Length: 290
Image: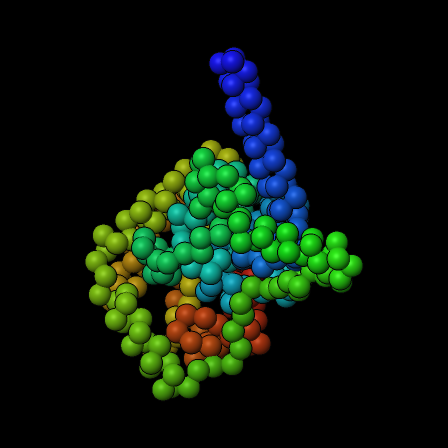
């Protein structure tokens, strides 16, 4: 009886693992097809299904709002992620979630370096080693089951999120609205100690090591700041820290922190899509292509 019990448990485990792998394959395809809500990484994968991305521009929402692939001539994939930090980039690289061919540009501001920034738990690299896909994607897979049931009953099912895009910003906040946002940021971030950015600064070094071993050229851009709002000492200190590290590591550093006027901005660090992003892309494209 003991042998039969062991075989039964082994078969049950094998069935569970195969089912979980199948769900990961099918579930990912359905997510990319727009049947369920997609996070920024999944949207990027949908728009760039190729296995290798030759040129990548990584950053947080500041990069999403600034670099327009549709008008760029340099051919970079906009891998901007809401709440993206450098440790996200390092996790994607070390776990093989992305494959970069020749160029990696990292767009930084103080939030891209903040260790305790809130994140999107649906990003694939947040899945723990022994966490089943069925559990990790439980919300999305539940939606798939509901859609399948509707289809079985003869009801029309269409991809409700097929046209999803990342979040872009339009227009500009008023002076009062900009002041309110700055007050929120000041209370939450501007008095943080530099020690709260250590993990992401370390991750930047790990990314550089990875690039060196894999023949990928790494460059860094310090992202724009609205001149209508005073840039805090913390941000300037982090900019200088990164610039000094880049100089020592032989990594090209482009400081665009104060390179755009207030009409280009939606708020403090997001460029508006209709004008500011166009200006940024026009400005950075020759450097990206060089």
